[in-house]
Structures are given as C-alpha cells and as structure tokens.
Length: 361
Ligand code: GTQ
Image 1 (cartoon, rainbow, N blue to C red):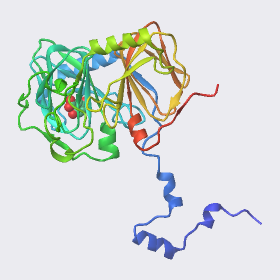
Image 2: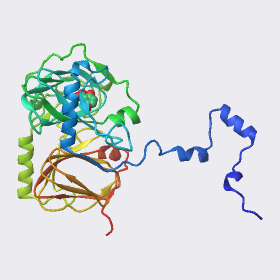
Image 3: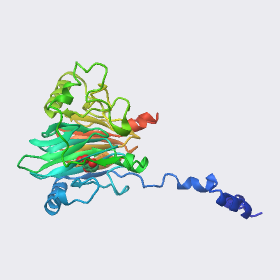
Image 4: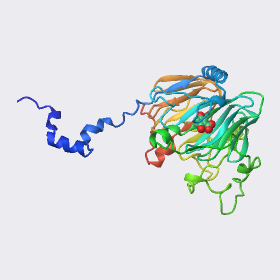
C-alpha cells in the first residue's frame, strides 16, 4: 500500500475550514511555522570608528538638527544589523549622535530607557535631564530614564558626539508602545535644579520617605525602583577598575568588570531592560562562553579582537560590535583595553529564561 502523505491525514473538510475561517481561527499545526520568523538570526558584526566618523561628518554637513522631520529630531547614525533592519539588535539599539556648536536637540520624553556614553565631549556640552544640566565629558555615562524630559545643548565651540543606547526595538517593536512619546512645548526644558542635585540625593543620605525630584509623572507613576537621572564620571569608574585589578581576580569571561548600578537600588541592572559594565581586559584572552542574552560592545580604549563562533571581530578605539545570542565568544586584547559592555540579560532574567555555559571542548 502506498505511504499516505502526512499532510493529507490532516485535510480538513470544507465545512470545518469554513467554520474556522468565519470564526477567525486557525489550527495550530498550520500556524506554528509562522512563529520565530519575524527576523533572521542576529548576526555578529562590527562598525569601525573611521567609517562611522566619515558618515557622521557627512550627515552633520548635510542636515541641521532644526531641519529634521517630526519624530525623535535627533541627528544620529544608526548601526543596522542585516538581520533586523532598524537597529543593531532586536532589543538594544545604539546610535551615534552629533550636536554642532550652538545647536540644540529639542526636549522630549518617551517610554524607552536611554543613556549617553560620551565619545567626544566638553564641559560646555550639556544634556539636560529632569531639570538638571549634566556636562558631557569624555567617557561619561549619563542616564535618561523613561519618561524624563531631555534635550542636548552644545554651548561649546566643537561638535560633540556620543553613543546613544536605548531599548527601542523592545519597546517599539516587541511591545508596540510607540504611543508613549511627547515633545516638550519648549525647545529647551527649563533648568529647575542646581548642578549635582540628582547625584547628591542618591548618596549615603537620602530624602526621608520620598523619591528625589518627586514622583515619576504620567504613565509611569509608581514604577518600582526607577532609575534616576545620573552621571557616572569616567575618572571614578576607571579608578575603581584599577583598584579591582590591583586587589582581585578577573572574571574569566569579562576581565575586570564593574556594573553600572541603578543608584536607587545600588544594584545591577541600571535599567529594567539593559545592564552595562565597564570592563578592563589586560590579562590575555578571556575564556570562551555563550549565553542567550545579546551583548553589544563599545571600545572605550585599546585594540584587540573578539572571537565569535570562530570569526574574529578585530577592534580598535570607539568601534562598536554585537555578539548574538548563543554564539561562543571570547575577548583577546592586544595589550590593555577598556570596553563598555551592554546586555539585554535583565529581560531574560525577568522571564526566568537566562542561561549561560562554557563550550564542552
Ligand atoms: O537623544 O533622545 O538615538 O530619543 C534615539 C532616540 C537618541 C535622544 C536616539 C532618542 C534619542
């Protein structure tokens, strides 16, 4: 007897088919292959600073911020992963933003969490967040938590550039929360706090019984452990890394590694969706491992390579690269290197879904 086609076994009567269609129902065995196909597997990739630099110089020349169409109104070059189409990964977005002398990137707020990591900054380059002016000095990391007003004002005499990191793909694509966005009525929000206010309120003395700056306004009122607006100065972070290197053993996978903590909790992660580490690599290659979280790296200083599933991503200062989920990887600095490591691990952990392992050699 001829073998029966398995598909044929599942042939539905035309009456069943009609009922299903009328009721907007489909059998699982016909829809299950539609899952997991929104994009291809994330690819390992690297963007070299020389090429980014040339691109941002060109768009700066072509487009004043004031001429940008409605929307985010930010002059940003966005690294695009070939498998995604609008960002470097399906959770973490990075962009390289420039503001020329005298320009302002106008004030707005949104549901996505954001931070700036200053590439080329100045004391007179200010990002204004939740009423306070934060100077953007080289390698400073400054948070823009969800639903806080922020504008970027360049009162220096040189173009400033920095890395924007947001959870945009997660918030806009996966959660489809594109309605949580608002422009300020003014180009520049009023400066209502003295410089150092936000930092001062998260020290060893804290306001009794209330959050510094009052409640989170609007849709996010009452969110747990909100991340404050905060500037992590690089000098202090580097000194802490050196102290660690002088006194402790390195992590086998991350070298000497310090998390940027949420100042409100004192704990990693910095944001509910993304965690950040300053990493010092100066003891040869790290051990290979893999995990289901995605990692994006920005090279703060130094040269080396990161080996991802056998492919070498050769990096130098200010390059940006991405390590996809489940790819076996290890770092190999030429001599000494510092990296900003970014991960969507908190999302996996929130779903009790995080896993990592070393390859069985
Ligand atoms: O500076 O507020 O790269 O809202 C993307 C979205 C930067 C910003 C980006 C934004 C910003």
